[in-house]
Length: 230
Ligand SMILES: Nc1nc2c(ncn2[C@@H]2O[C@H](COP(=O)(O)OP(=O)(O)O)[C@@H](O)[C@H]2O)c(=O)[nH]1
Ligand SMILES: [Mg+2]
Image (tube, rainbow, N blue to C red; front, side, top):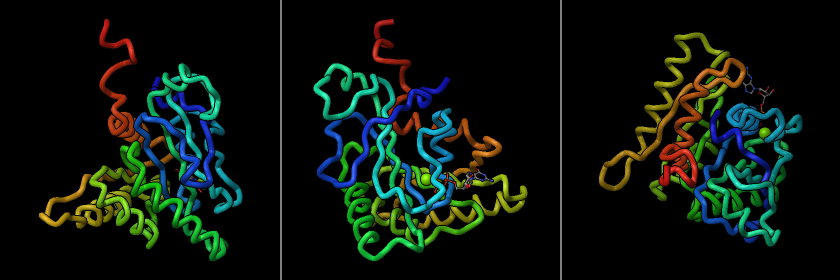
């Protein structure tokens, strides 16, 4: 049983000023609408409806937070002991690239997402959800560009790998890694950007993704708050 299975709805946010005042590490899932983000979160959390796999893509313009550990309490409840038990947060960012999103909604998205990924100190890493059949889109590249200066890791899940044959999958992974490796800092050092194949349908790459996410959250180091005393 993975610690990610503990995920529970924590809070939803539509403005940066409302971000939860938590200190635990969080990992954010970003990706183009319809890339398979909600399905991937649900599979990783072993829950059918944690993140709603939306039938109207682009509608979810909010940032949804899910807690790992602790009780099911909202951030505004004065129940500090329970909030203290939370060990990490999973963050479902609004999907992007949906054609029917209007100009002002796009600007709102840009401000909310750009500021969040660039400035949120508690953000440990980004999981970028990309459809394995398509190359990275402009907005995926935008996410890489925003995040690179933070020096924090990005792990890409190349989703819907079940739709590719073995050869196509190998090529998709190689192309993604080549793109990610092309990002270098001023000293020519590459960024901590990684990629893997993933299929929610066939559960391909599930263990690899789970282990990577736990490791990025620092949850792989012990079995709980009491681990030291055992
Ligand atoms: N074949 C296949 N379809 C998938 C997979 N993951 C998601 N989908 C489908 O892709 C569509 C969009 O998925 P969703 O998770 O809602 O995408 P989101 O907009 O990124 O949250 C849905 O019809 C899913 O059933 C996968 O691994 N394989
Ligand atoms: Mg979704």
